[in-house]
Length: 292
Image (cartoon, rainbow, N blue to C red; front, side, top):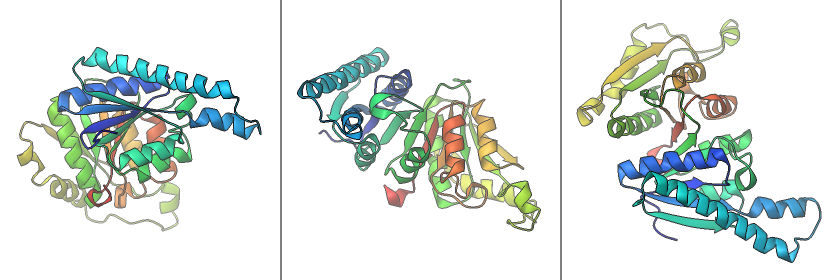
């Protein structure tokens, strides 16, 4: 297998969602001078036989392999339609999709996955599997669905944690090459109102705190990216709701996989599934530098 440090790895199963992820990744790779590595898993098809207590018929092995090759060819054509000169490699593996993607994430520049799929990546980003992919990959993970506003801004969730600063840095880079505005969003509500009513939750007594969090997080970033216009948005809302609202107007939402305060647990449990399943645009999950 070739070096993946400058590659976007895309899981493909032939579904429209997976092919949309291929197109998205090809555009990013072309613009940023990266390569594309397309992967397809055959394991779920074998699992269907094993789960039914049946042996895999000899002819099924070649048919399943041919199906994976066909889907990789389709994905390669989709990428070539974006950029015929884009370096593209492919990989077929008899490995569980989530295991395959996590293994490749140890070397990849980024993972890109459709928001839903079939065959080799059925359920890849649904339920607990979504939280596992977002929480445990060793590189940024892009969850792709069509953006309602493809020419909208890049939106970053900011809570002042080190990881959110990592995410903000990635968001600046995305906004810069896309030549669009960056919106830095800080949500000031940590808990559901019903929980606050019984005295649980961190009270925000300093009205200047949200502005300070954004100012501290943005310090030095605008000097590094003078071409990027920045809008600061502090909202009295839950993080997931604030970002879901912005996703309707954004072309990309960027968040960290870890957080505190307004984004505590953002990508663990129900918050993660809500954002990844219901955002109206692609979502990029950035992991702490020390985890890559």
